[in-house]
Amino acid sequence: MQKTVKDKIPVTVLTGFLGSGKTTLLNHILRENHGMKIAVIENEFGEIGIDGGLVIGSTEEIFEMTNGCVCCVAEARDDLLRVIRQLLARPERLDRIIIETSGLADPYPVAQTFFLDDPIRAETNLDGVIALVDVKHILRHLDDTLVEAHDNQAVDQIVCADRIVLNKIDLAAEGEIAEVEARVSRLNETAEIVRSSHARIELDKILGLGAFDRTRRLAADIHHDHAHHHAAPWDKDGDHEHDASVTSVGIELPGHMDPAAMARWVHEIRQQDNSDLFRMKGIFSIQGDDYCYVLHGVHDQIEFRPNHPWADEPRCNKMVFIGRNLDRAALQARLAQCRAA
Image (tube, rainbow, N blue to C red):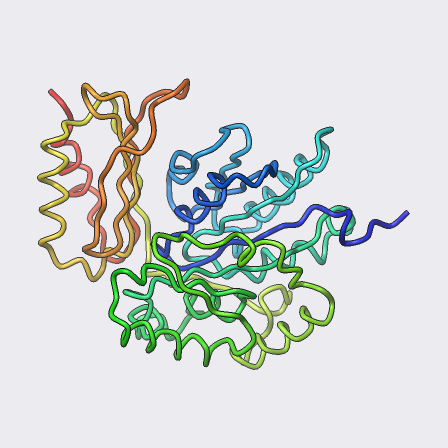
């Protein structure tokens, strides 16, 4: 017997440009006392996996995919299907699946997965696409002239969304927020816009949307085609291509890091011109400290702090930089200088 929407596992796709706060929102969801059993699928744009280590929750429920962006790499799409089927085959039923896309992903191909694959469509229901927007930095990405020849992923993410969260409003003046809200509204007239600081938002604002019934999907397809004037991303005749000038550098170091040296390095980065450094994220083992430290950076706004105690997982030092004109050797050498003696 065919399952009704109520009997299917709801799936939420969490999207947003680099540094918009997706992982912070994910941690907020997992911390809440909702009683749900949630599996998280992470798709990263980077050479090494970082986000899984930044997510608070049962490590056996975090699935990392680092073999390419799921929206434009066939192997990554196959991996996504494999992970979803693996989750559906488990004897204990999940209450929800959350997919966090990479900051450079077009979420449409991810959403389309739940309409094209019959076995998955029979067991899951796409509840909605949530787009996080960094109100402090989004306009520079929407107006990035260097990606005119390509799809602008920041635009795609907003256009695709069923609910848009204007995040980091604590960092912007009301005039800035209003300007972003007006710009976002012009890109997506149908999505409700909500505001948040530190990605803290009531869960009923982002979960249980039921946004992707047939009527809403057809409207989204039409809106997307009209907005971009090209074939939809899942059309075999259409191409989706990332801005080739944006690359990632992944660095792994053994041992432990010196906290004073790390603090000096973070201060040093804040003083530099970081217009080409879109995103930084890392997890570190600090000498003499039982806590795993995390580093989040968007341009010159950088946070370095203890996150959670190291448990059974092996201690490590991993860092990913995403941007343009990245000097791998210089970044590796400078970070290596922060290692404890």
